[in-house]
Length: 588
Ligand code: SRM
Ligand code: SF4
Image 1 (cartoon, rainbow, N blue to C red):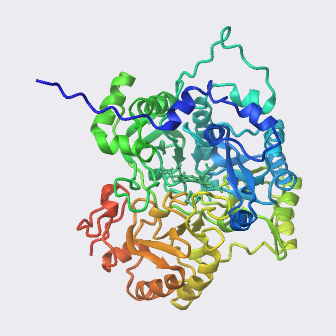
Image 2: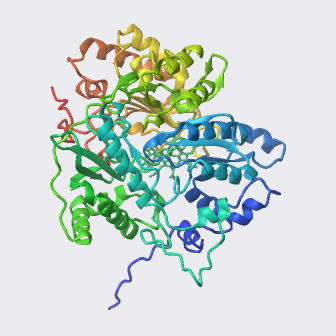
């Protein structure tokens, strides 16, 4: 009798690119030294991501250049690593300067508390990295199959706790950084290692790094502004009776990305698996990363995130494997509750008497346009400010640690630029997010950042008429199904399918505790406001006290509640029970 041999699936091509790259060096140094071409090889682009940069092209110019038989308008995006999203005024000024000297004149605040510079030509990538380095900023692991920028709640209300939590976010980021000197050699001209004499070891990642990207966030309840359940590892800060940090509950296996029409791919919320005292956090995070390194799918990148490893093998298997590696069991999760996943705008004073100002930055894009001189205003603030700049996970900006005597100075600068009332928007707009999409994102199927403000003009009028101007409703748009603005957690999610066409999802949880569900597929952009109007009107008339839009659309029967990731694609779901400990019941 023949024994059937198990099917050996080929490794994804990226695995061999990583394997032969000499720890992420590849031919990047030579290619960036050669300015006869404006681009680099596609294999090198895969390695470049680990260094915090992507090769892109200006998609607005594609058709014209194709017609003229010209190559694409190649350019690069550089994404800075800013753990917890905190940077100094000096660093801000450097980023601001680079936006003009090397990039397209804009700064893009991202949904992961970093800043991206777009439109950098090949010869300017290295100078950009070098100038960032002079201000102690780097782009290491801002992209690629490694742990990315670690996010952290920038809650100005509880600064002491925030400070502690922020410290752990930076420690996590440092602990999980790749150890290769490739970045320093390629971009900062550090002398190359001689592998025969000094073999380079990646103690956490190994030669082929992770099968896919890995994302960590730290939240401080009751604010879920970092969307704890959307990440591979979410750490929920737990404070003792004295208000100081004792440790973290851990949520594993969250993620947003999926592909249209492929039901095997889906967004998934992380599962809370237990609690750890803070001292053990780094050890546990490292083991979680290593489990994913060893068990993640290296054949199929669409199935390679930790969420699929956990979904396929089960949470119990995951906890058993983690316990085996740690040699001890993690403790049961401690009680916590989230009540929102947005930002709070305006001035807030903390216990020390310092002030923090949260500014609404539409879709995180900072540029100077005639009546909105955002970059000029923030440059002037940075020249005077003695505190810090804090990026939020909702693409907004906090001017943090403003001393009482500096407050009028900052107010004056904003007033001088007519930006002091920029947060007086509808609750809907204040809770909006849009990913970049066109023209720089190569994966965008529809407009996002450039279209959402226009759509919001229509929707603002509708919520205004319905008397909901000050009601917070989360709305998030992305140009494709990858989910960069975490659209599947929004009460209203719009996901690009084709130019001018969006899937409309409804029913996400206001505190980021429940995924939404498809309500209309491929809706033309001209139909979005008309489709939403009656639902918004009915919500205004029939909502219960304190009821959020996402809960209402389920109670009113527009969509069924999504209970877990696989259920995301199901059109009929009977469940109405809460899915997370902090979820409010929506059943009547
Ligand atoms: Fe993202 C790929 C932009 C946050 C899921 N994302 C991309 C790329 C790099 C396109 C590409 O691969 O060629 C986009 C670059 C566009 C451009 O021109 O700048 C891009 N992602 C962004 C940003 C800038 C959106 C924004 O407007 O703020 C965010 C930068 C984050 C950062 O600073 O590190 C951004 N991306 C996210 C998030 C949200 C988050 O992490 O909280 C997600 C969903 C969470 C998750 O990972 O599951 C996200 N991006 C993806 C995916 C799908 C991953 C998956 O598991 O399927 C891709 C595509 C991929 O990796 O193949 C992607
Ligand atoms: Fe690009 Fe899609 Fe991410 Fe938007 S969601 S930035 S279109 S990859």
